[in-house]
Structure formats: C-alpha cells, structure tokens
Length: 336
Image (cartoon, rainbow, N blue to C red):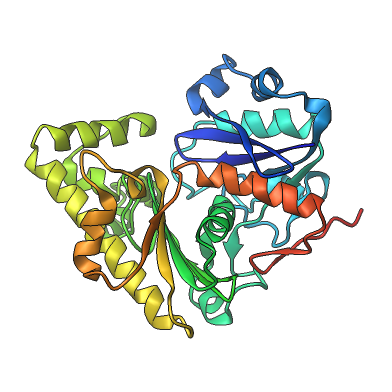
C-alpha cells in the first residue's frame, strides 16, 4: 500500500510518497513554471517513482482552501475548494494545471481545507477576528509537526515565501496568524500604513502590496517568486547590509508572532516547531539560533523538514485511509 501527499506551495508543487508503515519512499518538487509550460506532468513523475495502482489514497492542498471546512473526497469539493483566487499572492497557473491533472486521474484523492472563518474546528475568537488564518498545507505541516515532536501543546512556525504561525492545543489547531496580517516571510508580508495609502491612491493593488511585503521589500529585491529567496540569501552571504536588515527584521516579526500565540494558549507550551525553507535554514544563518536570541532558551525548539507540507499530507492520507475521523480537530467526511 502506498500513500501520496501534495503541498501546493508558493514556489512549486511538492509530493511525498509514503508506505503504510510511514517510510518515505520519495519526495520531489515540480517547478510551477515547468508545470505551466507543460514540460512536466505530475502523473508521469509519480508513475516513475511508484506503481499508481498501489496508491490507496492521496491527500492534496490547493490555494486558500477557503471554500470548504472538512477533509473531503475531491469530487465532493466545489470550485477546487476556493472562494476566489484574487488576493492570494502571485498567480502562475502551474498549480492549477497540476490540480486538473490529478482531478482527472484514477487516484483516490481527498482535499485538505484551509483555516478560515467557517472552520468549526477553530477557537471562535480566532474565527471572529480573522476571515482567513492559513491555507491547507498549514494543516499538513502541523500534522507532520505533531508526529515528529510528540507534543500536544505547541506552536508551528512555517517560515518561507510567507510566514504563518499555528497554535496547537490539546492536539487540535486552535488558530493561526496568516501572512497578510502577521509576520514577514521572504516574499509576502502584512499591509502597513504606507501600503494602504498606495492602495487608496491607486499606485498598487492590495495583492501587489502583499506580494512585495516580506523581506524582499527591505532588501530591494524583485523578480520571479522562485528566485527571490535565493537572491536574498546570496546578498546576505555577500555582506549586503539591506539583506541582513531584511533577515533580521523577518526573524523579529516571527518572534513577536510566536510570543503572541503563546499568550493566548490556555495550556503551557511544550515547544516550538520550526519548518519551511527559512525556518529550517542552517546557512548562511541558523534560523533556530537567531530566533532563540529573542526567546533566551524559554522554548524547546525543534526543526523538521522543509518538505513537511508534503510529508504531513501523506501522513494524513495514510491515517484517513486507516480510519481517522479527524485530523488536528478538522473533521474527515468520506461519505459519498
């Protein structure tokens, strides 16, 4: 028996192929531009790595996932599970083509929802405060963090193109802070007063501001999303002062967000799980060491794979197939 997880990420679409006993068979990523151009087929890449007839279930994430609130079979989810693609960051179309290819395949598939105002699993205060808290892969990331850490009360810090921090209490997601309202990522970030003025005066759209509100804003970097992180890190290695200020500022905002989630947790936090391409970074700076300067050893910090979104989705597929009726408090509904 084989299970597959898919993470619909900002820079690419990642897959994890996993056995029944939890062994990772393979992890790979499809570049969004390659998918959009037709150079790469998700089904072909999967079939190179495993016998698709042995796949018992695949769990996938897509975009904001704000059109549904349960883990559902893909044919029970309308409009790809999203209310609108607008305001969701830069759109390339590569992820849409992968989704369509998987949707038309014979692989049994479930979709993981995002965390939003209609999510019944979340604390009502978070739902009242924020219309959207996290996209679907944050659930799979958190599930992998739960499996890796063994903790019941913790915070997941997923730091990459955007930064989203998730609060887990009693092994259920209590709430999260989305990239457009909280900490900076490399590319995306919160809208501040200057951006609001730019929007009101017609100089930029809100989505353009969001898609340039991260560390790149400080470092003065623009271009393709897939290249921005590498450019920022290269500038950092070369001693660029703006790049260092950008990274240091990103880390500060993440530390503030984590501390804020700790305050609203009713139980004592057991630790912080760090993930994402920046959250798991060890060079040209060690993210764990840098953020611990703020925490001063208060928290037990654990770093997991930057591919935790795809890994966690495969773990969800496996556990749903084996009878799980909820994942981190999110209901599983496989009824036809």
